Amino acid sequence: MTRLLTAGVAAALFALVCSASAADPAKSADAKEFFFKPNDRIVFLGDSITEQYQYSSYIELYLTTRFPDWNLTFINAGIGGDTANGGAGRFKAHVLDEHPTAVTINFGMNDGGYGKFRADACKNFTQKTEAMLKMAREANVRVALLSPNAVDRRMKSNGVEYLETQKQFYAPLAGAAEKFNYPFVDQYAITRAATERMEKDDPKAQKAKPYGDGFHTSAPGGLLMAHAILTGLHAPALVSNASIDVKDAKATAKGCKVDDITTFPNGVGVSFTRTDAALPLPMLKDWLPMLPYTNNLKDLNWYGLAVKGLPAGSFSVSIDGKEVGKFSDKELAAGVNLGNLTSGPLYDQSVAVLNAINDKNQIVHGRFRGIMLGGDKYWNTAAGRKRRPEEMARRLEEATAAQAEIYKLAKPTAHKFEIKPQ
Image 1: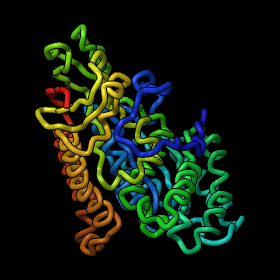
Image 2: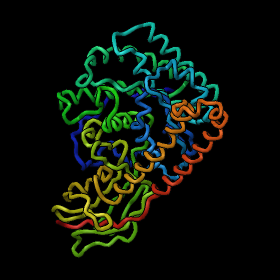
Image 3: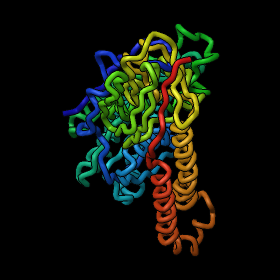
Image 4: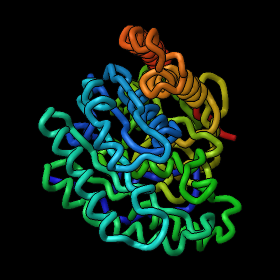
């Protein structure tokens, strides 16, 4: 059944500490309903917003760090200025010929024309979208259909008008997805709700600025989009969760293993070794302004720690000897989210993974833009056309080898945690 994600966005203010509440990620972490699966070959199809390699790279980062043994392949087939008409025309060559198992389709920003609503353009957009869905269904390829992000009225001169055009223009997408029994994420509704809150909190877009020109993403906008897409496709929230009982020197854990628990004299602190099955996303500094509008990533990046039985006071948490946060005994007893740390060994490792993903995607983009699309003029010559299939295969092998190295970087290791009084 098609799953339509509505525009509800949590109103939490930014905080690095998130308590485990009724929506406890530790109780809802299940990948069975997640759209992406182990061994997927994933193609991101779209226009310039896809070709930016921001939201798509952040989705890659989530999938690589959360599932370091999934053996995924990522191909970006975004073309600046493209539309659903162009996507349908190149769907076989740029999507199906890559033998994907999963595809995201993200067209509509250019299709709407950036002006008043036009019924004829909307009809063509819907027909071409359904044509892509039909080709995917016939090839037995899973598709996640996405509406585009909402334009930011604070940053785009015609944003007031086009924001309403977008709403009407994308309305048929839910029905198109349901027709072919594919999931649909109403990214427009989600990002519009978020930007409307930004308009109230930051009317001049001095801090919360997801789109530099009102619709192309900057890093904060890439996070906003990735969060909307991943949560809409039922991505598990939980990285791992550990709860330590100081008095009994015992632990309960999910997604990790806790060993070597040592309590301090009089129970004023504790140390232990924690080995996780996955890494949290790194909380990039550019992402911080988006946290109030992405539920503090509580529903996507929960790396939980609870320590119960500490005396009243303030405590520091260190990982491998480096202090990463300060919390009260009550905060630690309730549980804090260390996934939002902006420094420390976990952060450093995840940033290294992101950097490697960005490097690998230079190969992917060069293969697609330079060779397949003929951006490098040599590949349009007779000699180049003859060599093109061999070079395409070689570049894909190079990207695959780079992905294997990324998985090595993403492999979790054991870390020594220490919680001691200030």
